[in-house]
Image (cartoon, rainbow, N blue to C red; front, side, top):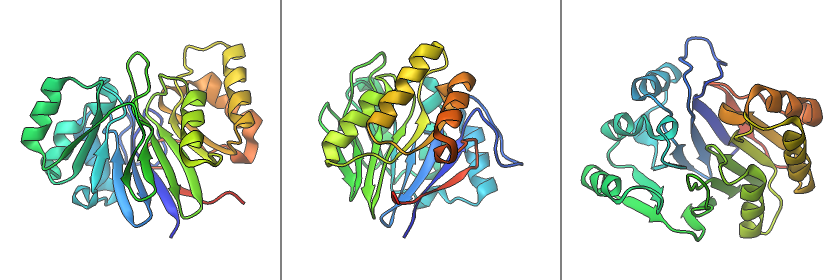
Length: 241
């Protein structure tokens, strides 16, 4: 079974008929499991895009929140209202008051510390990485696919990939999501691209807060290894050739 990632919320458009707003959310299907990564900035937009794509929110076993910023947790209430039985995964950087509220609304809440955690077979959290704000990312190691899904990469996308490779003991092929380079200089963008190449990353989907100059630079350097993001984009996370 091919692992797939579908972008449900993004500030870049892709599929006609879907709404694009600032933020990020994605559905990941891998190893027979389905999870939601972040919920974007707007619950009505998330729910509308789910309906337009024919995605059933109740089929998602788990929702992982990368960090506390509004553009990643804004659809939290709307999603939980549709699927209160999904396991909700946050980390120690989230307010204890919010965690308590979630525990009252959901069947199960997992609070991740600094150590990596396997959430489902082959689907792992990096653990909370220090940054402003602290953040966790999703790591896939399933059916020959290795991937990182990043919300905003506040700790640095290369640092996240380094952590993921140390966790699973093999190179990360796919890196998807926000790379947080929208305020970076051309030199900083170039250093980040070279670092990911040195780490063995061969396919990138830089979207959300990556910024237009960085996206263009990734496309120029990675060529066929670059995949455009955008809301509604479905990406087959194929194994490394």
